[in-house]
Length: 254
Image 1 (cartoon, rainbow, N blue to C red):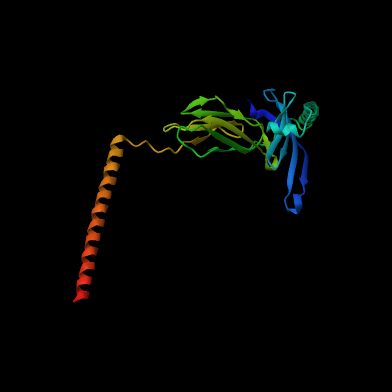
Image 2: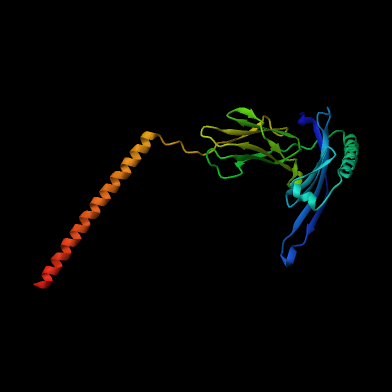
């Protein structure tokens, strides 16, 4: 990846605001987003076409195929991928014309922000998913690598396409299945032309250390001792209460 010499071109074609349903004052937006970008050495040469609803992907086109974010969506709608490919071909031609007209001038790169968090509350030895959210960057060219205990991990990793953000920025998600275990740690490493060196976000599961048998024995002994002392104290109080009751009765008789 030679992102330092990429000259991306972005085209947001459509933004619709839909009125709130049943009189509710709610506004929604559907965005058709497409772009084409290439670098001078052709190490980056391609584009993306997708539909977005309120920040969530509906579908994107990949290698002449429409990929729905949720398979259930295609039961209610359809989209011919060929139309998207034709649009991207036009975008490519427009990009080449722009590059020639502006003497290959570049837009300054904006480095990404990185955050890592689990999808579910962390329980020891329970399968979970670690999410790396990369956001607010430009251009949409970057690499994401997961590290487990400092070693690259790729099993089961899934990535989303580039999603449109604010002010022509982009965001992207990467997912890593994992099983929380004490002592393990994870890093999401991101390479982008806006960074002088790869950026990393560190994450460790907060799992308490297991209690040893000796500690369990001491805790049980302390609990038993506290229980015995409580029983003894309660018995003494009951006896004193009974004696005081008898003394009141005898005084009353006199």
